[in-house]
Length: 328
Image (cartoon, rainbow, N blue to C red; front, side, top):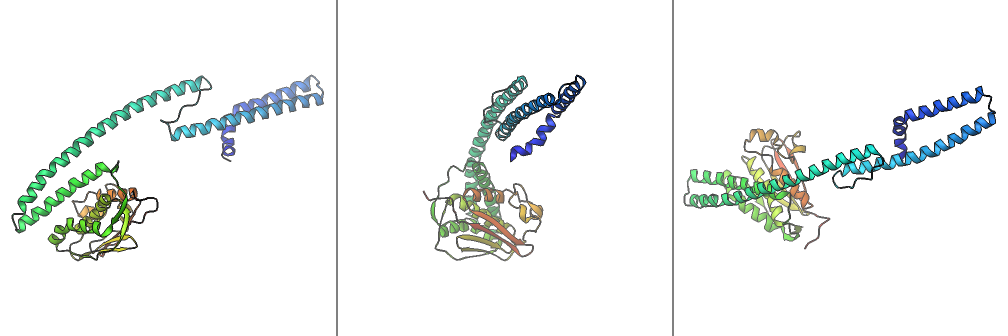
């Protein structure tokens, strides 16, 4: 069926050859008429040439289609598939150019990967080192219980979260440290809540959560990261009211009473760097947290989605049901 679709292109590409065939046929008919050749002999010669032409064209069209599909495969995998053997001088020259491009690409790719690995190692080391002074400052602030110290503590917590997010971003491509096994969902949620408790207290936002007796097959560290990002966003965009965490059929729902998300922004909130209208209001928004959360959810074979209404709050759902994973 695909080959039939190529027939018009084939005929157009070889239109001059087809035109020459008809020209030669006309010349042959004219010579036969002028020299008084028998009609039967002329027709026999014409039919014989026509049959040979049809058979030759069919074979040539088959080769044409075969080469076309080879080029399609080569186009989809230009740097992995082996080039076919050249059939003529033109293909020999073109394949030589392609090989040069491939060689240059492999060299450039190797250099880029080496450079990226060096940058990744450096920034990972830097982020781990910066945690030490952050922790030291946190210990110092614990000795003071004033409004200013609590404010500084909250900002220090934000700095720590941004450093953590950068580390998660560097780890995202590999995610080689994932361990899938049944985990107590209540324990994961409680750990995330305890981590963000100072922010809830600082903004005087009520948290509603009832323990659940539920186990899910997941990676504890990455699921905790997703829940943490959703709690962080809920706190960031909620000035008063509460945050509710509920679990039903292994679907975690984190609901806030914040400013909500506009309909025009909702389909794009999981895109990298997209902040939308809320991000322009909240200058500290980076548009990275939800992007990393969606990528992590995809890696975990979980579903992450949201509903929202401006002025009434947002609901984020983590469907932890997995169908393609088995516990280790």
